Image (cartoon, rainbow, N blue to C red; front, side, top):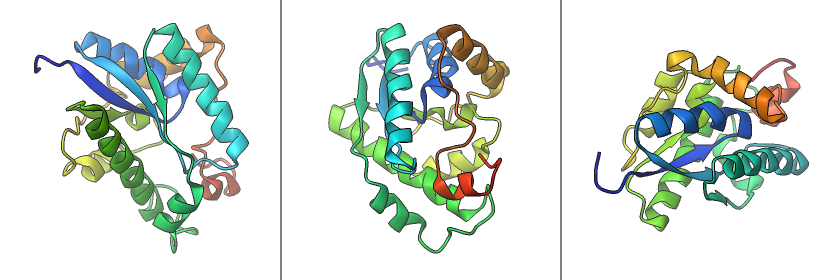
Amino acid sequence: MADDNRILLHVCCGPCSTASIERLFELGWQPVLYFSNSNIHPYQEFLKRYGEAVKVAGFNNLPIYMDEYDHDSWLGRVRGHEDDPEHGARCSLCFRYSLERAAAKAAELGIAHFTTTLTVSRFKSSPTIFRQGEDLVGFEAIDFKKKNGFNRSVELSRSLGLYRQSWCGCEFSHRKEGGE
């Protein structure tokens, strides 16, 4: 690891960030949190999830940045894929959108490395996420599911009293009942 051990952590939600932050500390990284989730709909859900991420940041004494909510831009990115099945092309486009935003924020802040909490979810394919980030400068392909990461995130979320959502936040996933 370079002298600068900072890493920008794209945070999809507070619960997923818990075990991801813990793992980054174990690996010697100093996380800087970045909540960038224009896929979340409605806006009230976005704000609720941001509030939980702020709680986790405070608990870990870490800085957190919030990206501008731009749902229309995100909708433009996934246009034509609204009816795709879960884990299909829409999800890959969504991952890419978030990773591009994280790469830009890391560059803006002068942070050479970034990664995402998306890989902690048992509902998301880490290899798919890695493919979406592999050509982005500074992307670190860390699979937070490893070492029982998902279950650890559930345990930590309960101990912190965090709101745990039942879907990824995407309106198209939510409509399909049970999709995340």
